[in-house]
Image 1 (cartoon, rainbow, N blue to C red):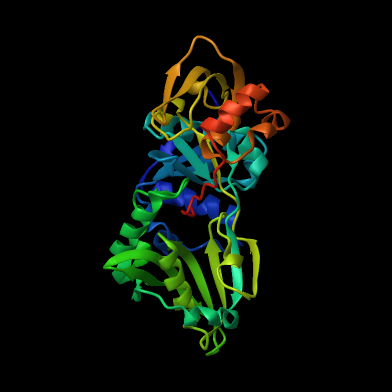
Image 2 (tube, rainbow, N blue to C red; image 1 turned 90 degrees about the vertical axis):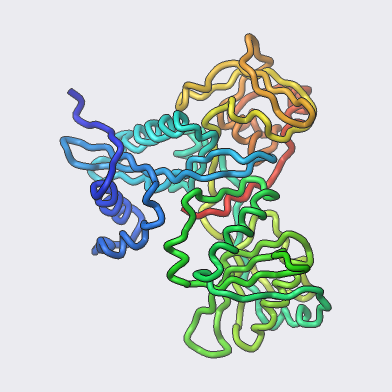
Length: 394
């Protein structure tokens, strides 16, 4: 009989194991977060799937999955958001986390999830399991006074402010609209309804002709009037008017907030928004990572012209190993099993192509594959480089 076993957790056991192991792994301690605070923190995660690894009947490792929808090159795919990967220190360095991840990803694939994303504790560990790193979101800090020119903009439209508790449904509707145009953006299927009831941020909606065209989620932090920090955790817009309406809204706090901190997707260029902006940029968070869970589910994504036959290697998720032919038909990808291959590609290489995160020329140096120069040209045409932005933090 094995000295350890893996099983899906339910009910009180699910939250007890998660609270004990993840709070020790990811928070300062002692003490651990008390049970009441923990249950408040996770009440939007009731539907999440949790697995535990037990040694001699005691829980020593765990991991969890949130089901999400992710926009990938024009298609909405079912996504497995992995979080809560934690191991008791007495059980570390024994491969338990790897075993749990293999179990949870196998279960996710069986349930129809096409891709998986996570925020890694160590990129190299998850890269060995098939994940590739996304471009880094960023945090920009601006001197509010340097935004004064935004007050002189002549803009059609308005900005409406509401607390997130009252504006939750409108907030979710806007995110769904925004997601349709942002590659890599994921939204939780369960949402964050309970957390929104705490009403911890303001929502500013930029509007034009009775339509929401921009969204800003923010809070004013600090103890001294005129010296607040405006912390903007979401800054999204559907067009330039939406962007400048929101910048004008920020500038209206010029006598209330000393600085503005904005979280932004990796492809934003805030230094170009206004002249004479006094800003600094730094990393927002751990860069997310993503991987493919089911090659066949990539059918229908938007691609450029071309046809390739690939031998895919994925020892961690062996159900998708083998030879496949990828072909563009009317701008959409078709995926079929193949009897031969032009070259070999690891799942890291294929995931990098899907998300558009790495130059194909880099693949040989990453040991992800070694296509010929002609095949590289085809891959670049079919899967042009992009900047995926995950949006959800989990």
